[in-house]
Length: 310
Image (cartoon, rainbow, N blue to C red; front, side):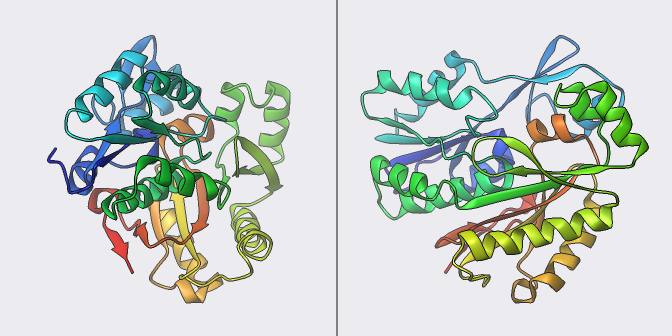
């Protein structure tokens, strides 16, 4: 990867959803997240594709997430610091993985050259932070300044997700078998929320139509309570997220544009990270909102990522 004019390199993990190809194009470094599948280790984007992941998920394989090894993280940092003065490292939320705490501990040995951003983001909201950090670096901001800006914005994001099945919440220990069985019989569709540190229950619905309406209402409530009441594209970015059900996501995208007409043509769909999909399973559908910055990822397709600067 060629060094840009910036003296600060931006590093993230594959939980952000950015591919290695797009990272190369945008000048961002990505650490692949490890997954344990039936006792073997796979690395997202290297030896594990989304297609293979969902195939193993549907086959009821034993799948668990892990964190990058300290040796791998430090090896990447050491290589980057041969060309850059500083690093901004943006891992997934510390509420969902210990990778952030590990990175913070490792950064202590780098004497102010590595800044770890634990701003409680994952997947599409994490990617917005990554793109924002890269833009700030290209503006000439130093690592400490970028860290301060991203941490100030840390809670200016939400993700809401509804599930097609309770099976994977049960497998992950977030539901007891009895509760999962009752929920399945009653056809309950939980709506989960990632706002701040953890994946939490937000509400529940009986149909996907009702669940989508509840998520749209949740975004409108967030706009009123947390984003100053301004729903314009100049103030917030709205995204649709999904797991292995792109057609349903595109349909939901149109419904979101009807609900937020100012965002027509500006709401995009993107896959949720595989780490989230481990808990939600295939068929999950969600939406996200983040504060608008000078540079945002347009979200139209991760393999065709673009940055909009206004």
